[in-house]
Length: 481
Image (cartoon, rainbow, N blue to C red):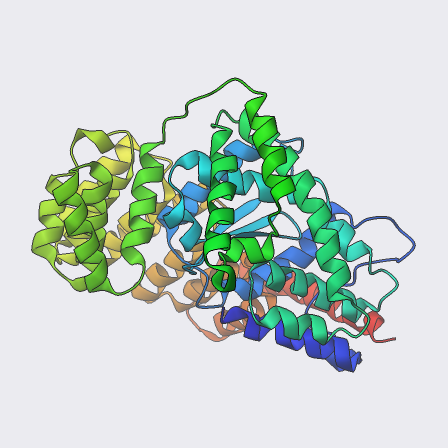
């Protein structure tokens, strides 16, 4: 994955050089005499890793997929032993079957995993397993076990865990670059924790109301593939070592519980089709879903064909597929959003606005549709309406950088450059890109078209972010002593 080139390698070099100049990536992990990392320390490490992930091309910026994962993840977290803990689930553009947990409750889900899941319980089972890695403090303990190493090596280890769990070739470079660390010891430690994550994950899956067979059947299928393709085993097996003991333990635990059937949500079926339609060559995706609608004309097949057709610009077929979604998908906001997507692709911005309003009346809290409505307003050059709508929504969701990005675009279209830079700065700040946010605020100061009130906000925010920068610089200086 491309983003390991910008994360793992610099930190691996930091582990080799161990100089103040190299200590630029992760925060100080604190006093080595303390116990396992606190949630706050984990969160700080995770935020820095996520900042770099979001800047990479492998981060899937698809609001529909992200929203589905967030809802599924929230349901599972609510059934865990840490329902109030911070978690963030995000999609990664990678066709391999994998998922991974990072410090701070950040859980990455490969699109290949979503595509390969035969049912929603299988996907939920993998996410439950990753949630268990966080709630059982496996990552915190893994990092804490290296407290006798330098802070730089601890930083390299944190990213090496990420790299190893995603099966990147950069994992070897990151670990090899940290002379104080032992790859074998870390893998042994991981195997011990995998068994506990299985047991805790099954409990989460059960409490959340999913079918326990989903977790066991998915791992059994991966194990079978591993035996058939020994030299090309599924990615998940290489980052989460499967043993006969683990499979047998899961089977026994599932067998002890009464059978539960779980009906897949419409959203799962449609999101899986959306992911499959976006993978590989666009023409191949169209061929795949054309075959599916011939075999079984269900909503997911038509939705997949719609998305694949949009990729190749076949708007006539996309419109036909839209009309075939039918009543099977009536409980999901995705068909309403697809109506807007097709209208925008056809260049019919006013129709897109009308459809988006109808969709938001039915699904007022569905953020992906809110984003698309704002884009439709901007496409139709209804800038004042876009500004009013976005200002209201960013107040409803103050931690969502997407509304700030759209607000920056709207202010730019209105010629209000100072406010455009201010909104862009807030978007960067929400994504932990403090230096970029500071630069945008400086540009806002020099824009020349801000009133006194706006300038006061810009100046106050700039002082606040500079203070954060100073604290981070002081922390890095302490690491160099």
